[in-house]
Each structure stands twice: as C-alpha cells, then as structure tokens.
Length: 313
Image (cartoon, rainbow, N blue to C red; front, side, top):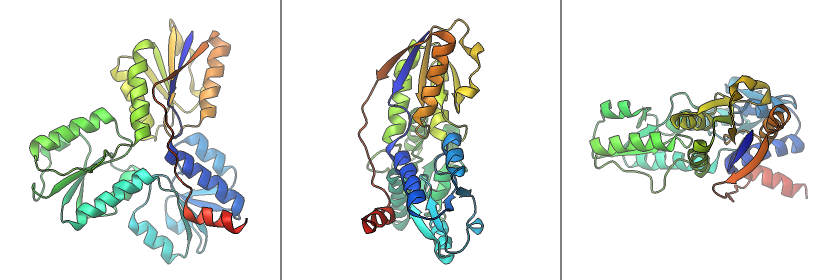
C-alpha cells in the first residue's frame, strides 16, 4: 500500500490561534475556563480540553457571573457579547479574523440599507454569529435551488457574503445563479471562503485521482471536513470522514493500492499520525508527502492574553 499525505492539511491559522488562546488561558488563569460552543469543531480537541477543566457551554446562563469566557473560532453575535457584558464575564475573543471580516462586511452593507444574502449552512455556529450582526437585513441561501427561488425586497440594493468553510465549487455555483438573477448584486472585495479551506480542497481535487480510498480526518460537525469528503466522492473515490484511527475499518482497503490522507482545518496532526501508523502496521504502507501549496499565515493571540503575558513579564 502507498499512502499519499496531502499538504496542506489540518490546522489553519484561525484554529491554531483559538487553540493557543485556550491553552494560554489555562496556564494564566484559574480553572474553570468557559468556552461558548466548541472551541473548534473537532471531538479530539474538545475532549482533550474538557479533561483539563474547560467547560463548553451553549448558553451563557451556564456561565457563573464574573467568570472567564472564551469565544470560539467561529465567532458570536452582538447579542451574545451584550449578554456576556451583562453577566460581567471576562471575555476573550478567539474569533478567526477571517470570520470577523465577514461580520464587518455584513455591518457595512446593512448600514448602507442593503439586503444581504448569506451563503451558508443553517445552524452552523459561524452562520448564527454572522446573521446576528444584522438579523433584519440578512437572508440565508443554502443551495443553488434556493438561489433560483429566493425573492428580495430590492434587487438594486443587494449583496452576498459567504460562510468561510464552504465548498468553493458549491459556493461558486450559487454565486453564479445569484449574479444571473440579480446582475447588480454587490460582493465583498475579497472572497470570503478562507484560504485554508480553498487550499485543502485544491489538494484533494488534485490528489484524489491517484487514490483508491480517501481518508479525511475531521469530525462530523466540521463543515470544511465534510466538504473534503464530498469533494473526494465527486471524484468517484471511496471517502471516509473519521475522527481517528479507531474509526478505521480495514475492509475499506480490500484491493486498495493507494490511500490519500488529508485532514480538515480543525483536525490535529496527531490523529493523522495515528492513522498512518495503523496503515503501516496492518498493510506495510509506504508514505509519500505531497505538498500542493505552502501556507505561512499566522494570527496574533487575543489582546487580553497578550496583555496578561506582558504584565507577568
């Protein structure tokens, strides 16, 4: 068996920043540290932090007054921020800057009186947070079919934004339909889909044709990981989205010569390494790293943490 290790894979800059922020919070402050929603959509990461005293909550009612609260990489709505202030919570904002960019775009278009069509998945943490910036001005578009049917108050004052973790191809099809129906629709100056999402999708698209089976490391609630598995299947490949080596069924590899392994932007490298080791043990697999594109993006830690570090010398 030959294993192709796709690169780039795994943690993006936003996830790295959020996880480092939570790690540093644990070192600097007394436990428990509360996190609004999962820090990132990955079961391995969440369970590891939970074991160390982090409490993940879906409602601020679960957070005692005056406690320390960290916002996840997916961002939150202004309503959550207001509620946190009312409870006198010490908030640390670990929202990915690329998500913050979409929030600011939503505010800009809303202030101009535009209706905003947000392309994304209903219920996703990022979508909930973004729509909360201008709830009266935003409408969700989930599919090309929806784009064909949606009605808007004024087609001349219309803009679209996208969730950062979408399939690039799916988003482009929806955007094309919106542009066909509403030629005057405004768009952000720079694509909202994050660089890491696009790079990981590009790697799968380029490498999947060489593979018989594709393993995507990531959790079921990870939007960008789901897209990677879907993309591999669109290439006609057997693809499995798994949290780690324990999820592997060796029957998947009957008659298989080449396995492509990649990881969503919230999946840690340790789970990739465990899968590679299992394939080495069971099938004598050789490993070939395939780098499609280099990444050198980094994001600074939230200001309260930088200040706390500086104060402690």
